[in-house]
Length: 408
Image (cartoon, rainbow, N blue to C red; front, side, top):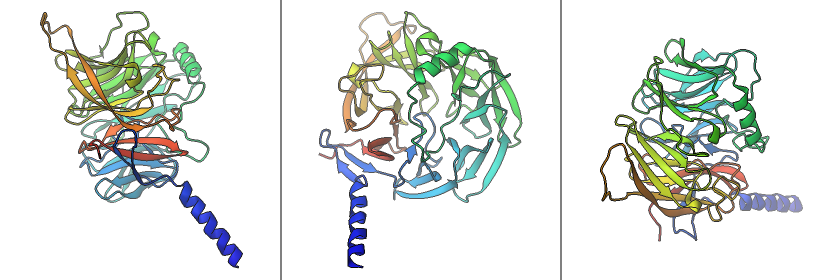
């Protein structure tokens, strides 16, 4: 009996030792890092999904158990949607999360747990985004009988058979094949109240990464997906099908742009720009109302897979990248804070010109132990005091946050 107790005790201490630390100060940066989640396989949302409740109190994250909320002030977590589902967005107006379950779109209340089915998805259809007043969802579906490459799906909650959010090893080949297939696609909206659908746009381009403006319920951003050096990626359209507009035009061979996201006020679209691919790096900004542009320059090691911005537009963050990414960084495995700085114009003042600037980088977290097949997908908390990211630096994936203010 004593031997058995000793074995149980030994196993308990081993499990405790294997658990990632709850909090530490990064020895290389002086910034405090905390682990927010307890569930192995838990993950914060994709960088441009809305992952915070409408009142800013809760972070939304997923795990093998379902969709959770984490109260940012107390760090208390609660499971709000049980089971394997595909997260779409947190509502910007109501205390709701939107998700896909069993081939249909649903919402659930964060307050009461009430769940409501909105509508069944079309065959081979997806839903990607919820508009600002939560009246419409938007997604795409492949028309006809062409091969479905499975590349238009919203991220699933993590499962036990490896992490579904890891990038597939054959992603480059899949992207080339899917782009070259020229499958007919429809972009459509779903009325949240009635479930009625409406086709907004049809094309043989690969339509993907739909993202509603956070403030204009009738404005939708989307991309032509595929190898970035072969597509005109970035577009906007109105939900009545009008106003189709290309946001960026290539001016050199191998120029690429993508991983686009909105500013919180809906006035600006930001995106990763490389002129050309893998050589010169910018975070580009396009003002929706005026058409004016700003390009912020980055050093090679500071390039990040994804960027994000505070609600007031003051700071940016990036999740870095390893040597296998497009920037081929030698020392790029960091979570970064960027302070934008526009360069003074002592020449011709022409509103048609790009306004140049730079991003001044500060390292927040050493990600040397992180395997970048899982993209960290950074976001600022609503109070702008923390940068949230997901990481496998301790083996299993968990959600972490780093404090913007330095601890020492």
